[in-house]
Length: 197
Image (tube, rainbow, N blue to C red):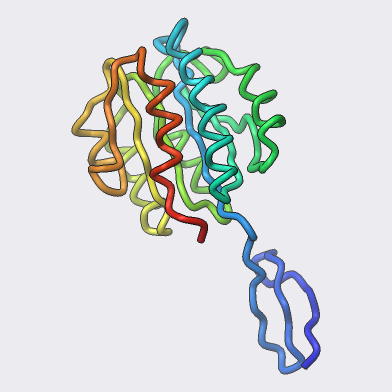
């Protein structure tokens, strides 16, 4: 039976059979999004720890079969690196990261709303050191969980431990570390990703 490669009604790549039945072509790799707090309180050693941890995470996640993306949040959220399997490209993007690029305060909901726009997203790894308005963030997290997207949370300093446990897909996916251990916590988060889907 002949198959025609086409875009379906939602704009995704699909095979269309002669009888009109369409089958969506699945991405070969799931996407993992690192969502890093770049508010003012992350200045200094913490942002450097986060950057180093992000590089480690990307190398490990790519080796585990994931494409890795990077976004930042503070007053608002922005993409830094689209999903990639090129660790060198990811490293170049993360090297330019600094606090204050998208504001000074912490609004995690903005980052989660940005994450919800991704297609083929399997996991979001949140890195934060501060308090954020909780209810908007929990609502945005619920929208991701409803799509079967795993949420892993890493907090340090003033991040609320109980809130992170509510935010994560499961409380075991939320961790709180001293700021000197932030790099290792981010790096280790790659081992919490599900096996390649």
